[in-house]
Length: 242
Image (tube, helix red, strand yellow):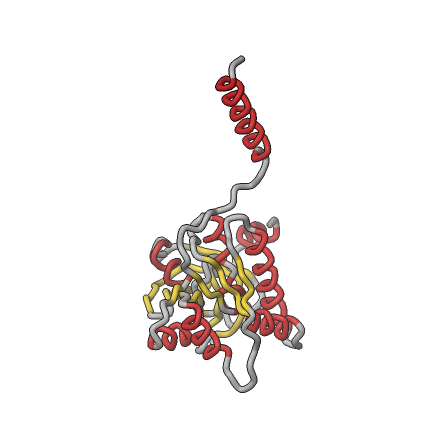
């Protein structure tokens, strides 16, 4: 074997060795840009950023400020059971994003500052990092836009891609609170859309059958109105079997 053949054989062995080393490893998404996406408390508690990342639609580096982690920790240790549960879910979302090979997550060192509201800190941080801001907070969305910060709102994305609920469509909705009128109950669809149900004020905490009567489009998203369907033996047996 001459020197050229020997060199080619060695190079081939090196290539084969590297290919074997790479087998079984999870591919990590390579970043080809320096774009950053700042996540606020609402975006983390909402959780849908996880599904978007899993689908491969997050190409920016995800930045979570230390003061947002601090806010979630305070809420998770608070006395309000509902806020405590949501904040703990938000912390779980942070961990899930960190372990997702498709995501490049950075916890930035911006600590909370006394007498500076979180929304103001977010806008300042977004400007400092030249980052876009991901939030579902309607008011923060408006303020950040006025300040020249690009805002990505998961609600707007959801509104753009989901089908319109037609009048007459029936759904099962869990009523979580009273509506603005004394006879109304309020629930939410799977994608977070609000459903105002007539005649459901006494059904808080229960999952009931409703019929969509109409929907409206607002700047904050789509809102559906529905009427409660009276329970029948078949409905009750179907829910109890679940």
